[in-house]
Image 1 (cartoon, one colour):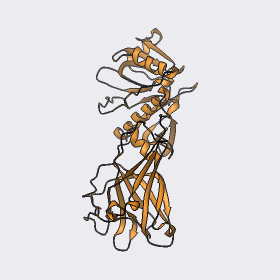
Image 2 (spheres, one colour):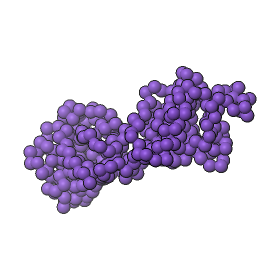
Image 3 (cartoon, helix red, strand yellow):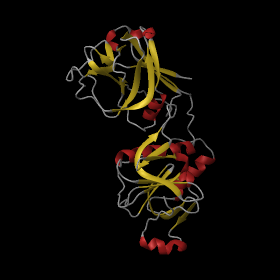
Image 4 (cartoon, helix red, strand yellow):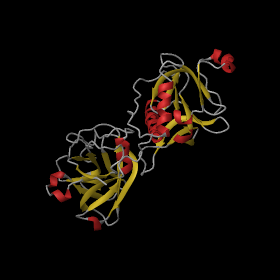
Length: 360
């Protein structure tokens, strides 16, 4: 398998004891609780190269331990930075926000002058496939008593430099059209979570009965080994429902919502020949934008409207050309397509040009 080793020259740490100070030129990056600098957070920006794949088999962050305080292990956690920052100017007062990834390493005194290895495969793949923007990494230590100093490029001694090692297969393992359809759905759901964090969203699912989950979107849960999230989590009155991507038949936003033009879609790759490519590409050819259509997903769930968007693996219906009341429909769970309004639905269709049958 090809392997790429990246140096990480853009690093800094911030200190609560010196909230306006920038420490990007220090030979070490403090993480944890230090006697002089108090609470310290390490920050790294990583420029990923252009790869021939949209996912890697492994991504390992290598950090050399130069100083470690305290006898007990220091739990150093990797966090995904959620907004841009400049390592050369960032301070504790201007530090970017971040969220946990689940990747962590326990640093011990036995790790001094050697590199600890942290698996960040899930995070890097989420950057590569567009699920999250690459704003870098924040390193934290929440034990409140110990601190670790990791080497930066300023330390001069090249073997201690921080590195990211990427290993990938020469051919993508998720190049099929069906797998891409799930990636497309995940990409759109992640944007809906960001755009409508307080809205009641309905996710309809497969099954004999019309069933689904409704609530405010919480996250698209991803395992550390995954390339993108596969469980759409919604919250309703303190209860959390997780809907797997492969069961979603439609996603409905609150009534009166107009399609947000900032929503992006993954570019369609060149699919290998096969039955799944035939199916996915057929929907694009059969349902051009502005087509009046009813799409069925099982016996009890259907949506009627016009085709507002038709991207690889995903169709968006709306009431009219303005994008009113968008319904996001993954094509993998479509059971029938009827262009125009079926006569059996004519009475119900008169009251609204967009109908989702079934109940939550």
